[in-house]
Image (cartoon, rainbow, N blue to C red; front, side, top):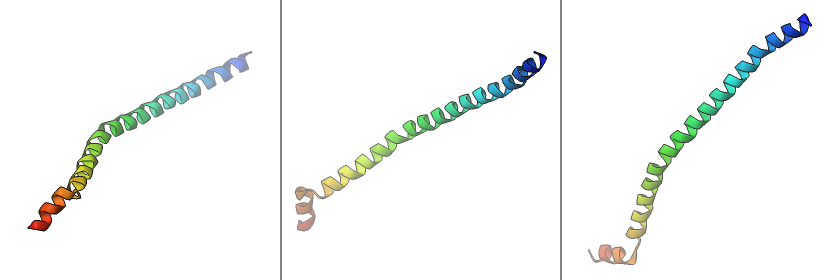
Length: 69
């Protein structure tokens, strides 16, 4: 019985350590996802502006204006 109690006492700190590590892993992953979520909208906006600029530049109206000069 005493030997079993020693095993349980010795196992509990390891289980708490693993639980703490799991919590830290979740916190780290959440931080990464949230930073990506904060970074993504400005990047998407930049690509949208560039794409629309290219589309406007390639339009027939702009090409006619540029060729007349």
